[in-house]
Amino acid sequence: MNLLQNPGFEGNWWRKTHTGQEFGEIFVPEKWVAFWKEGGPVPHDPGNPIGYGRPEIHVINREPPFLNPLRIKDGNRAVKLFTFFRIHDGGFYQRVEGITPGARLRGTGWAHAWSSGQDNPNVSDGAGAGPYFIRAADYDKVDGVRNFTFSVGIDPTGGTDPWGSTVVWGDGAHIYNGYAQIPPVEVTAQGTAVTFFVRSSVLWPFKHCDAYFDEMELTVVAGGGEPVTLTLSTTEPLQGEPFEVTASGGPTPEQMTLHFEGGEVFQGPVARVGNTNRWRCVAVTPGTYSAKVSVGGAVLKTAAFTVKERPVSGGGATPGFVPPRENYARTYLLLPPGAGDEWLRAVLDSGVWNKYHWTIGGSADDAGVGPTTRKVISVNPQNWPGDLRAFFDRYYAGIDYVAIVARTPEDLRRALSTM
Image (cartoon, helix red, strand yellow):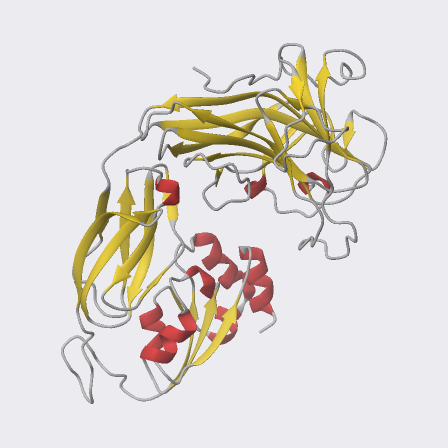
């Protein structure tokens, strides 16, 4: 059952906006509230002197000029939100009450854009003619296709600030010339009300920046409110060695945060799959720790663990460590966590192995230990938990450290081929 009122915009219109002010060019579907950014700055386009513009909004009917191409998905009405030679970032929201706390909710909707510097309504710059859909995360070119991004969001606390930190946004999508479903988003309600948002954002001030919306949907799905589970890959990690913390279930796993007590721990960005969060971590000092997952400052689960001290190796062979037979100079090319075969192939294709026979690997500790003269070339160090340079300075002082940031394996190949 759709929990939204007037989800297909078939009802009447009013002029409700997030500012509380009414505007003559804004006709908002009944039960919805319009929102938008206004002014600057524009971080992606600092040369834009105008900034974000307040869009015009109309409830449109299934009649000319909206029949060819068709701008209505179902029924007799839809909504048009547009700017002319201006960019915009805005949409609509609806607060829904009577929600069961802990209910798992799914939001989505349908949209498309006409985005062009020309006047042919069947053609959008970059996307051409005909329906076009691609997720924003899957498109890395800088052209007209990137101009429009549609997304839906839900605030599981019932807040109505579209820019608030409690809003959980789904994946964005570039959609042109015909309706397609906006990628859905799922949350777990924290109280008896949630707020549904649908949004259109524009990068560049084309002549026509027109967004069309129809058939919004908010439904209850199975799987909400599971008990929280918190596990560590080991309960006795070694000082300086990576370990993983996994948490799943509970209210709003999308809002879940991890923190530690007992000492300093580097933690990488969260990896989320479905209802499960995973963090890759490194503890700096030995001792007794506790890992805690929270939502909105409320601790949901705690797990205690002990970090063991790393053995210190002296001269000669010691248990667990064999020193080099003789001192030598070494360069270690360090690939980041998650680097697959395509990244190793890029290294080999660059020619550095044939030219230098560098050591290639994926262990920061392996890169740090060794002879007195050693160099570490770290690929994408931002993908490691915490500050990788600080890690080497603390545990393996004296290395010659070089960082390479490569967005793709091909970027890495090009960077290494010049060394």
